Length: 80
Image (tube, rainbow, N blue to C red; front, top):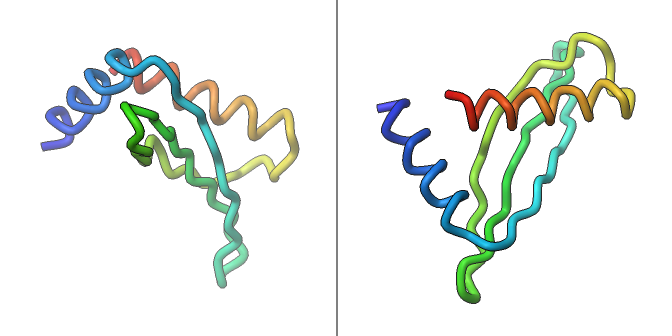
């Protein structure tokens, strides 16, 4: 099931002309920080959100670390 979803996401991303990547950091009750990485695709006049990855932040929420997490997630998605 996971491979089917990943394949579908790749097909949609390759077919679209515009996309934006967004991430939101959330701190849970047990003091763990998580970041959700979304891609927002524009197809026609439709705005399609896709959850790319949900990662636990171990190294804190610095800009350099978040950028590294986002880039590694995109590389993993395109290579998977």
